[in-house]
Length: 113
Image (cartoon, rainbow, N blue to C red; front, side, top):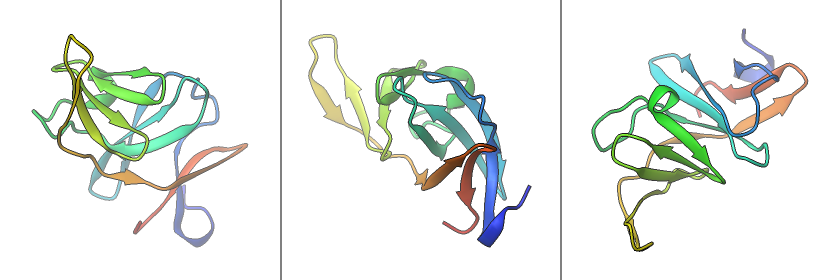
């Protein structure tokens, strides 16, 4: 699955907007997801709060991936937030993201990034 210059395909092109899938890269468990407008994002799969796997316990809401265990939210840049019932957003732990690219064969990340 290695592409040019260390790029590795982590998801097929058929990943739909607003959905997630899991992948691995070397020693990293990843979650690959698309925002509701279709932009791809690749990040560490485990929520930093209590280690829930975001491919199975996450849901896409707009431009964020929400951990359904305790409702931490992550932007496409990996910024972590918790939104309370009144709408106030408090900063929480961030999550690692990988720069990705997309072509007709799928979504790719570069090994070593």
